[in-house]
Image 1 (cartoon, rainbow, N blue to C red):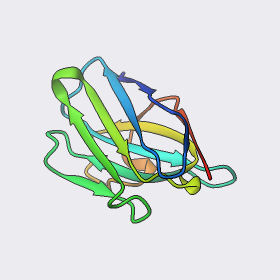
Image 2 (tube, one colour):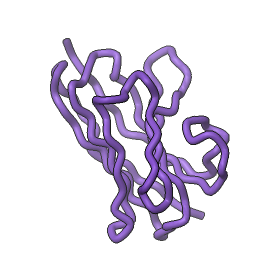
Image 3 (tube, rainbow, N blue to C red):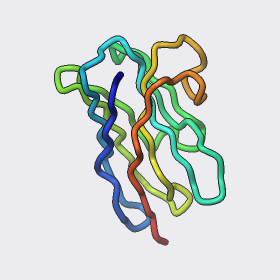
Image 4 (cartoon, rainbow, N blue to C red):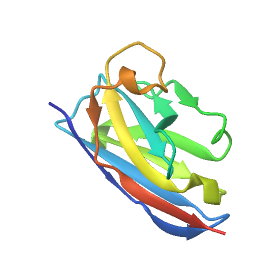
Length: 123
């Protein structure tokens, strides 16, 4: 069983930046990792994913060019750098990990989930 713990959420004004972190325990380098978010009154959506070695990344159109997903396997941690934040980026952000080769931005691809960290962007 892999436990994922997110951190780095908070409140920021539109145009600002935040960096989210997701630490995996125990270390599991073979898993693809991803970030999902759930905005108020919306379903959870996949926004970014990264392959196990970090060579391949995937982004939802809504965040492409503004968010960057990376991972540091030596620290068992994945990151989501979020720039040019907009009020519509507000929501709970969840880290996920899984070994399935399915589409990288759908929930059923992932077996392990964190509890989430909240991001609030004010206008």
